[in-house]
Length: 252
Image (cartoon, rainbow, N blue to C red; front, side):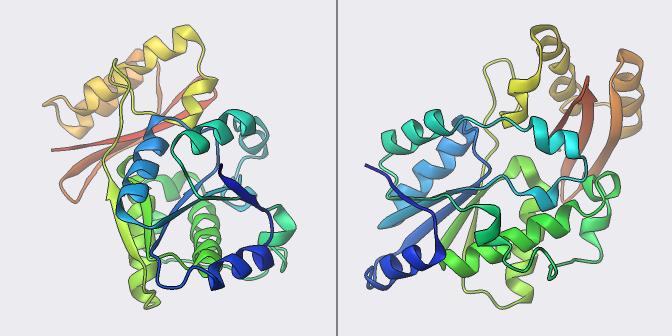
């Protein structure tokens, strides 16, 4: 049975008793899907102990409605963690994580300002700050992140390197639904018609067309396109379908 930990002091007591056991960590905002499960499976196979956190981090939302509408499914999430034999769920509240009320924050000055950062001011400050806090609390040997959030992954890798953090960041491949849509907690917010329409996004992203052609074609279809760009041998994009923002990337 996955043990629920709500306070830092409770976790530190447990951590002190783990001895030389390796700790794998999967930070999440809940509404778990098969993509998260792939991270958990990798962690449980690599480590003696696996910790998953669920914390919907308000500081990374620049749109209050987006925060309000973010899907929450604690009971189902807990069942998933149990089914994967996760040892501990770290489930803190806002005050536990932000005892300073977000007076102190981690900022990055280059990669965080392009792609998603250009359209979501302050987003990556919130991401990096909460991940730094969680790393300092859990003190894992390895932490697992999906490649769907490729920009986030690169920023977290860079933060660990910049601050000499002795944590191995393990990238895990994108998991897609059978129809090709990259799994995301936000997919739950799409209507049936929006879901079908959204399939044009990965289809065009992995086509042989140029990024400019893909941008125009998505707009012509009716998507609101934030960007289609190329970085590190990948083509990355962000679009809106109705009120739902989707991101994806493919190797080119």
